[in-house]
Amino acid sequence: MSANTKEKKVRPVREPSLLIALLPIFFMCIFMGVGYVAMGFPSEPMMILTAVVAGIIAWALGHSFNDMINTIADKIASVMPALLILITVGALIGSWMIGGTIPMLVYYGLKIVAPQFLYITALLVTAIVSVCTGTSWGSMGTVGVAFMGVALGMDGVNPAIVAGAVVSGAYFGDKLSPLSGDTNLAAAITRVDLFKHMGHLLWTTASSLAVAAVVMLVAGLNIHVENSSIEKVTQINDALSSIFDWNVIMLLIPVVIILVGSITRKPTIPVMLLSSAVAMFNAVVVQKFSITEAFNAVVSGFSTTTMLGEDFDLGPAAADITSLLNRGGMSSMMSTLLIAFCALSFAGILACSGALNTIVNSLLKVAKSTGSLIVVTLVTGILTIATTCNGQVSLVLPGELLRPAYIRRGLHPDNLSRSIEDSGTIFEPILPRTAAGAYVATTLGVATLSYAPWATLCWTGVIFATIWGFTGIGIDKLTPEEQQEMLAELEREEAGKAHA
Image (cartoon, rainbow, N blue to C red; front, side, top):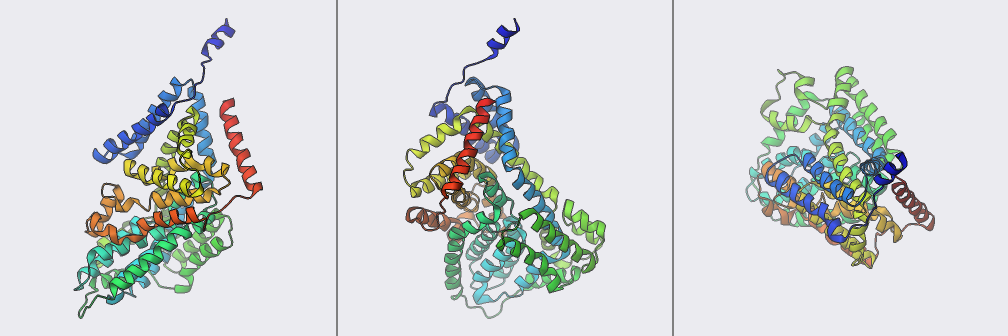
């Protein structure tokens, strides 16, 4: 009797057709496009609804609920080390903030503003601040706003060019910062070492920065200003000086630790923890904050109200200083982790149902060469960000979809991690209806379509990625040993899914 009952529970498993495999993607576009973009619903429940639809389809194809849960667990387990890095990044930002490292970089960056070099200065300073903070939005909302304020006080300055410079610099730094949540996520989802991913990304991002620098330098030489006002910059720097002590050597040590660790390819988490510990030392010894406040900044982030007191006078730049300093902490990474878990759940169910393989095989029919595979990746990333308007989803889905194809063709996954960055989160701020596009337009006061042509870094990356793909320049190949190891890993994952 029990044997017959067990036999009845065994259901035949069918492979999905391309139409069936694309149904979850279609519903993702509907839920994210209508729910998230049009209705303003949170993206996480929209992704969960999409996962539910994918789960119903997987069940109809013969897969059990346990099959889906096990595959999701495998997906999350595979990227767990990098997700731990995200939490460490939050701690690092909080410690750098209270220790004075990030404020010092902003302070000295703003002091070098010159009218004829305003555009290139905005580009480079925002890039430096973004590298050190790991946040494009934070950099645009602080030093970016400061540069826009300077621009409005200068005759002959085009605000759209300044905005384009700020956006380009912010996203350059965000992509090449070990503190960036998106950069960590791209490396995690493709299972590439963080610093290797950042180094490989230089092929496209550094090339794009060089183009942006030339554009900004040439445009800036045409500025003729007699009386320029930098009152906003002065206000910000005066407020920062009232809070922090600029012990340059001590405050640069946390940065040096990260740079040395990056160059020598040391394990990421220990390097970040060491840098964070030194920054906490600076917070207590140099900045005179208490040990409790230092630990609170690591966990919950820096807060001007909590750390300085409600009665502390930040002067006329209070709003800008609050926007700059109130960030970081391990808890600040929870939203990124949550969307990653939701997207991984959706991707896990797609993998369980076989939809991933069906979609990938169909895509690869038009990708006969390395260049065409790179183009397929870029198009997939752009379509994903355009339809979902979510940077994290635009990294997770193409990364999960296309990683096996890169390995089977002998291409290192860092080519994939670079391409999904070039076509996803970097492309996002020049699309008007995305959250990033709306944020930039609102924060900097320039319409998206006005600054987009000047945000050259955001769209030239796709061009350079295509060129390198078809020429073979800057394309990493797997050694036979590496490919064999990664293929064995893919086979184990497939075997584990079949066994489940």
